[in-house]
Image (cartoon, rainbow, N blue to C red):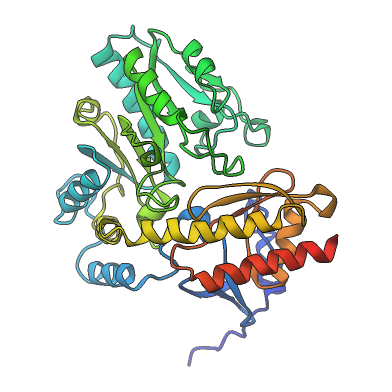
Length: 408
């Protein structure tokens, strides 16, 4: 007979993690055991409205029925072949993802950071093979306060000292300019520039939305300079801002789009570099790869994600609910909120520092059944699943108001 293991409390489970897990995260003290839609439940049965959605990895909510069905169906057939062989799910995934993004070719990977690293490699190869940049002289221009991941090369061009300190020496070949500054960008681009790599909305920095015309300006500048425009849409893409891609707010089509997070539906890690044919076809066998990239399970789930987005329903929901979010936050300005930025169903909310840090506010909201996450200083991020209802969203905003009023 199998022994029954007694249930462990949140406190016991959190304590058990301390000696065995690397301390690279500082999670809120809640232990999630179950989830459905926009709601999660902890080990004691307390329910919380998820207003973070896995940093946009859960755009379609927890355990969306169509995505779970696709995963179950594929689990019964085939999960991995490696790219040493073809599989029967990959071509459809690539075709539909390319069409969704108005681009031509797909390089499937797993995590967002892998997509960024892959995009960097592709841009450099393109610079040497197509643009004619002398060997080992290619540069990539990036924006200050960026967040593209935490691998060694990526933190080499981060301006976040927490991510950088103690991890040098750093990879050369990057130039950092202020975000939302076309003049600075133009001054940094020269004949060695392979690409400009930016987030259409800077997520980790606090949901920083650029001025109207900035993305179109980047597109025009890169086209004129003969370099690539790489848009990191790992957090901003796939419906989050009310469009399939955030660059669509300015009718821009980059040369390369980096996708991840929501592409795996919150089920498996799936990422991709999607690009113009001229760009991605610089890769030759052996120059880049991934054992799990493009695996049948990932392709099946990714295809189901694309199918959800092809209807436009989730983009419309994000736009409509985003209006409710913006209106609710506007009503909180001067009532504990000193400012905010939003695009679609995504917002960075600056709380009056006198009322607490972002971490402290997040913990107070957690105790009221709302899960959010802080970023720098007294800023919190709101990014609920696109399946959240208007009533749930309004209830969450009311709870934010109540928590801030209590500290005033």
